[in-house]
Each structure stands twice: as C-alpha cells, then as structure tokens.
Image (cartoon, rainbow, N blue to C red; front, top):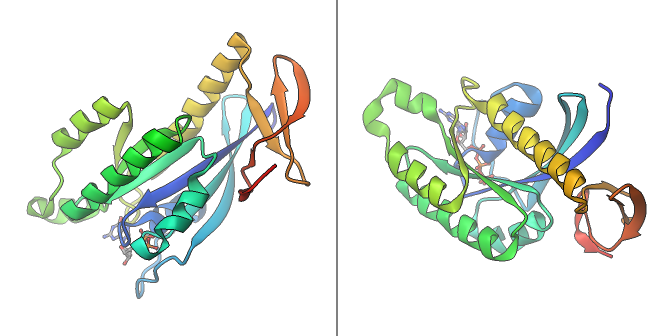
Length: 219
Ligand SMILES: Nc1nc2c(ncn2[C@@H]2O[C@H](COP(=O)(O)OP(=O)(O)OP(=O)(O)O)[C@@H](O)[C@H]2O)c(=O)[nH]1
C-alpha cells in the first residue's frame, strides 16, 4: 500500500457480551472464536492497516470492556477517538439502553468523534426473527437524530463487518480531505515521545494533544 498515511483511533463501546471483541476478531483476523465467553478486562488494542483510495489508513482499535465495573477506564480509552463503534445486541433491549448511555456521553465529552451504531449477532435473527428485541426502524430514527450511521452485523457469518470498518475509514479520510481544503488541523501522527506532529495547512509542527497509541498520555 502506498500514498499518504492516516492514523485513526477507533474505540469500541457497549454493554458486556454484546460482541465487541468478536467484531474486532472478525475484522482483523477474519475468524469467529467459539468456546467459553471471556470478558475483556480493561481494554485491548489492535492495529490494522487498510486502504481508502490512494491513502493508507492505520486503524488503531481500542476494544473496551463492557462491564460497568470498567466504565471509568472506558472513558480513558475513548479520549481522542475519531470514531466510536457503539455496539448493542439485537436480541437484548437492555444493551441498546446502554448504547444510548455511551452516545450521550460521547456527544457531550468527545465532540469530534463520529458515532457508528452497530447492532450485533444478526445471524441469530436469521435463525429466528422472533429473537429481535431492538427494532431496526426505531434505531434508524435514533441514528438520524444523533447523526450517526447504523449497521447490523454478524461476527459469526461476517455479515457487514468489513463494510462497517471500511465506512469508518472512508468517512475519516473524506473529513480529513475537507479539512485540508479549509485549512483546519488534519493529520496527526503519533511521535515516539508521545508528542503529536500536526500537519496544518501545509506546515508541520508539534502541538499538544493525545497520542492515539497511548490514550492516557496528554502532553
Ligand atoms: N451468534 C453470535 N454470537 C456472537 C456474535 N458475536 C459475539 N457472539 C458471542 O457473544 C458472546 C460475547 O462476545 P464478546 O465478543 O466476547 O463480547 P464483548 O462485547 O467483547 O464482551 P465484553 O468483553 O465483556 O465487553 C460470545 O459468546 C460470542 O461468541 C455474533 O455475531 N453471533
């Protein structure tokens, strides 16, 4: 892959057991792990390089723990994220309430973060439509209201998983292109010392900010 490099921090949020880790596993390793459920502790990080047109995009994905016990930690991980994939389980209405909680929080604390709502485990509905507990049209209305995009995915079959992450990257690249045109700060790459190099209107300078590799550090 060639072309200008773009780094994009993405955070996965949502109630425990909704399938955040499985979504990342399917996208990054194209696999679905069977076996006993293992909850995420704190958060896990994985990077995936992909392309959008002539751009090389490195997605730095933070998979947070859904358990409310780790709620305070999740806040650390979404700081500076440019995209949040807020997951809920299509067969669990409570998980959608929890998704709304995260949306509210992101909207008030992380304004620059684009939100993607993701209804998970769609394969379970293929097996039995009556298992759906979150209505598609209700969520679509909600998504329109909060200016989010909506996907329904299955990590088991892979349905719409690549499309979701591809859209996240494409949206970010087009926002960055718009910022180049308007002269707004655009492309921040992590510096080894955790300082941020910011390319702004053609000149490169170091500026305070968050390192997408290390969300806890502020300089
Ligand atoms: N049928 C089906 N099961 C899924 C799917 N995605 C996840 N699961 C199952 O749901 C359970 C929870 O999945 P995880 O990916 O660990 O959920 P999580 O949201 O990361 O959970 P926490 O780490 O606790 O926040 C596991 O038993 C998965 O196998 C899916 O698309 N279809």
